[in-house]
Length: 66
Image (cartoon, rainbow, N blue to C red; front, side, top):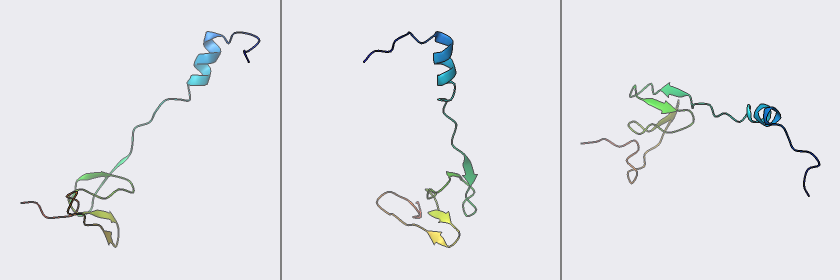
């Protein structure tokens, strides 16, 4: 079904004003000092949160690099 009246340009722009993307927040890994995203494992040390470190050798996460 089609709308009865055409929506104005201003009304369309006002609706789309809330569609803007925001940048992701970065934190500093306390073990390696490298920036990492929240709730993600650090590539260098495998640190996720206090008491939890992940090691995935296939992806190179949390392993020593030569």
